[in-house]
Image (cartoon, rainbow, N blue to C red; front, side, top):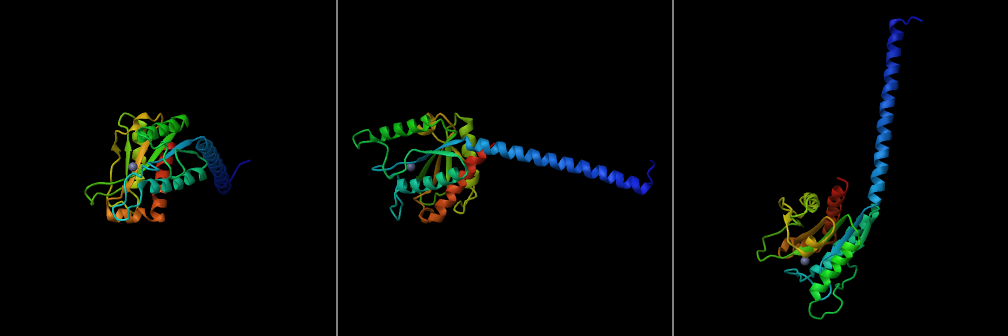
Length: 234
Ligand SMILES: [Zn+2]
């Protein structure tokens, strides 16, 4: 059958429409498979959250409020745990109460505390370890949230840099900061990518005020979650 020019045009258009539909279906299918894979992978992740200090080891104290670093660390840790669990990621906490991990307060309690933490971290066979702290400095001007990593481990560096990118978006961050190398026991001994998040300075009056608010601690926990998951999915 010979097609006239109008029929030819319609015929080309329908071939084009079929091809376009096929391409779109393909893209849709690929996206769905990718999504399904991502979800499966997401649910296989294990994250250890370490709330720094605890018990007789309060960490640093708020300059004005005298709030204990150990208490704020625990609160941010619990908020962070909720974010990971909502995403289907398994969380192991080094502590969930106000107490430390040293057992008795006898001499050498800090060493026992750190050894018990690293045992929990390394027994968890985790994908990442996030240790939460707050900082204090002699100059009250110093402020900002910073992520620390072990310089010998490129994955830890990538994790810290990912979290730092999100820290720099926080409402309390007055300027962009870089993730920093840190020579810390937990970072050196962890058997997975590890980061110490110094979430701000309790020696800075404004930052202390922010850290005392539920809203700001919630914001920080969301940013750490976003930074860590961006690393996990990279
Ligand atoms: Zn600390």
